[in-house]
Length: 158
Ligand SMILES: [Cu+2]
Image (tube, rainbow, N blue to C red; front, side):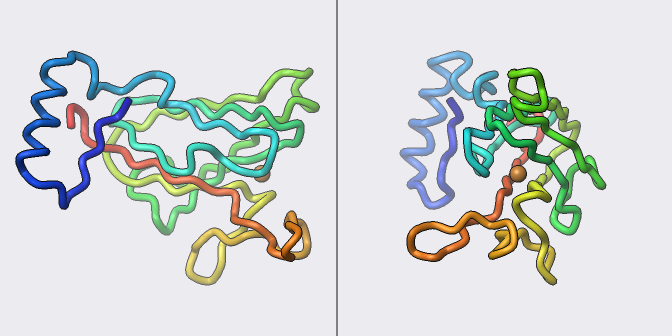
């Protein structure tokens, strides 16, 4: 469980939160289960946004039958790696098992990524849904959201 304190929270509540953290050792520490990004049996990364600490390793797990990719959106990345383009095999291509990928983040910053099969970058380097050619259209005619995610890497110990 991550302790995320909104900036506008009154100071008293903030102090309470800190005291709570101090009273329960490990509460504010990274839980291994929160260092995972799952691709469920559809075209998305979950959770969409993840907060970790420098030194943590994130594990992507592709539980979908289809292949996906983890591609860094370097225009927004303030932590490495840059130029990442990693295949995340689906269960069909991986002998019935989820494809996995580990990435260790060594310094604080933001890591924005997307799947290049189910998203592409627009002129502002923002991931957008594939659209009619490759998009998944819902009953209302929308082509869904881009398959992307954001990892915020806090400094060690924060
Ligand atoms: Cu994908």
